[in-house]
Length: 133
Image (cartoon, rainbow, N blue to C red):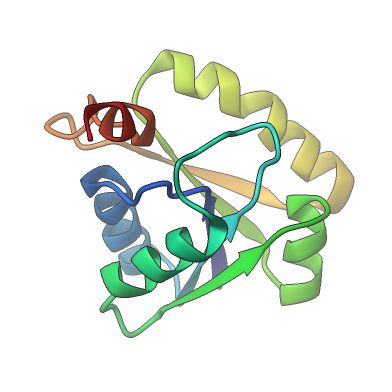
């Protein structure tokens, strides 16, 4: 089964890498997709996120792509992906992700697999890493 691990990855964190490694054990193939979100103003352009994801993945069943327009489920339909992977650090992340998971399922039958963050990494976010650099 093919799964999608989407995000802005601006920048890629140890938390992202942990979720990706664990997802690669669960699915036949994982596509990391660097998404452009006009509402997020990161310090890194999409190409930088794509490059850092490519460098971060040395797993044989992981590929990296990017998507700059349209809905996530449109990408899933084009790429033949049935599952979206989302890492969650706690209840606030889950509350944020659940409406999107429901909508992805309603629009295109795309399921969402939530992977709980490693407690040792749960405090890490791209926003925090960017603010500290």
